[in-house]
Length: 471
Image: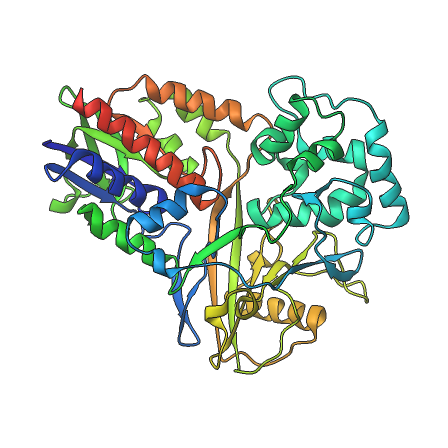
């Protein structure tokens, strides 16, 4: 069919939406992707580090959710899909590095024995007593995760295990996140009759004996390859360094004012007329663009807080030894034996985690820095960040090799925080947008920060636009 659609945002959500729109609308549709930065990618970025293409944004996706795995196969990249090696993650807890315990759901244990090696004896006993505390009260819209877990398990479990795991996903801790949005399976198990959180966690653990299905996946050559393929197959016109400053509803559809922050007069900054708009942008941009269009959605987007972080990628000389692990998570309060805190929240030993980074090339790893509300080392310059991460690496592992290459990638406001009541905010957004013809939203602010969740929102938004244009 003949129509014009603007996709605002050139990350995974926007490009997946552009691809799906093409499949749904056919060759007659004119699809334009507007990206405010010089290149596509959003939170996906593949750079050359030590002469190797290496992901310095999101580096993996949850393979147990089908959306991204199915999309990879659909666009012909299935032969590039790989899963991690058998290397296991570790955690710095209670002042020492330990194996990440099985038998937990995002750190919530199915039994006291599951966390016996990570917690002190007092902490283990607190977990053991949780089943005797009576029913879990999840009344109301949502409950803050931190107070719930601290009240039933004590502080030690949260600080040593739950927070480091959540920090790897949200760059935030349990005290600032909500249960229903971050651990929906646990909330559903309690609502379904589990008498305690340990019983709820136990019900969610795999029951099938034998080797479980891979949890994570990635693409050889970097995840940016998926973005490039989506853009190619979408047939969309890409406009980079093109900030959509304002949206206006017209009698025929929509007008987009595109350009710099202040009005400009160059031909490329003239208004663009389209029949429909799909927004796949971070919460602050969505709030600004929807103000006056869908005020309730704009207000809800404005309530979402953001965390900033940075990834420090290091290429060490070939043959450099790393710990026998896929990486190490570090709790916010953890210190070394001398009492000195760590700047990093996690290390990923990519040459151990992914077989395609092994071999005779450089040894690749990355350190993640930055937690919600705690900028810490992020306030320093790039050289300072590299020094801080190398110092952490040396104190954690004894690895002091001089890098042959290093790259710092900063993600300012990169991760939305799913605070208590987040699902209610999303419901308000979607209800308000549903009342505006020719408009849809997608992205990490809505139903999950992971790549499969973003693809799911993109697919739903594209189908909404396509259905309305057909009508």
